[in-house]
Length: 117
Image 1 (cartoon, helix red, strand yellow):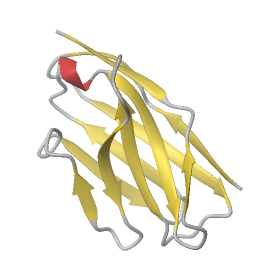
Image 2 (image 1 turned 45 degrees about the vertical axis):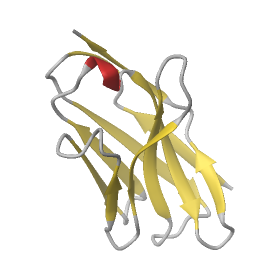
Image 3 (image 1 turned 180 degrees about the horizontal axis):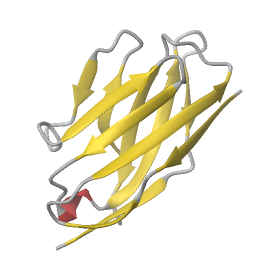
Image 4 (image 1 turned 180 degrees about the vertical axis):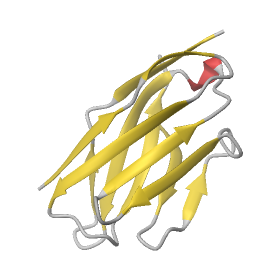
């Protein structure tokens, strides 16, 4: 069983920055893919960024050039550095871990990000 604990959300003005962190515990491997999703108010959950065990990254077009995903495989932690935040980035951000052995997803509890204009 995998547990994910997120931190780093909050309230920030447009143009500001935040850094989210997510630490995984339990039956995880460094090769598991980790990522961030978000759910804006009244909308469905959407992909933000993912990173594989060997460091390959993927970003949604809406965050390219502003957000950076990284991970520390020794600490089973992934980070999302968010710069030049916009009001439309307001959402609950969820950490995700996709286990390659079981082909299952684990989710964190979510952390709120609010960007004021």
